[in-house]
Image 1: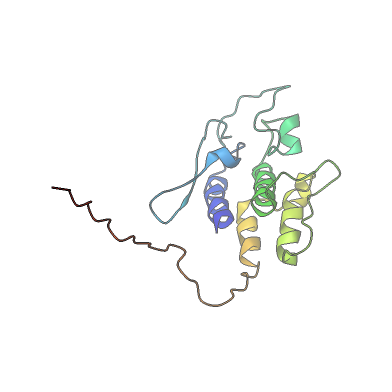
Image 2 (image 1 turned 45 degrees about the vertical axis):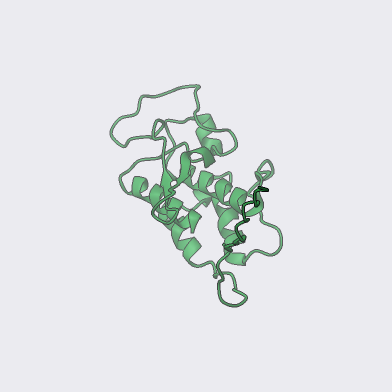
Amino acid sequence: LVMKQLSSAVLALHKRGMVHRFVRPSNVLLTATQGGTVKLCDFSLVKLPEKNLPLPDHWMGDPAYTAPEQRENATAVNAAADVYSLGVLAWRVLVGGLPDVSAGPAVLAGGFPSELVDLVAACTDPDPARRPPHAGEVLAGLERVPAPARRGPARPVVQVVTKPRSQPAASAS
């Protein structure tokens, strides 16, 4: 659910011709109200469709979540750079660490549905032409991932424990 909501937020930018360029855990917030809705924040590095000053020899973002082409030229990136970041973030949510993408796409090991394994690998491909072109394709891919099987009805995890009140000590008169 978190990755679907995040992909939807990034898709809203992509539909407007923008690229976030800074999708990383510290820029993803969960609301305390609204049932833990995901909010994407920090738009300081957003690439706008109408104006972007060239930044030769500069790159921006978090190295762990930044697409390889963004490290080469942050001005020339497109939505596929955000897709890369979504793939790395999905890996982190699922595995608890960062993938080793030095030798190619991140491949999830055992226990994950093949649809999810294929999606994460496609998103983290070093070649932007082989990645899903925008967050809408990521969202569609997430919709194809089968829901995990539940083992019986959901039960509340909160348990109310009451203690009997202690009686005041009787005074000795």
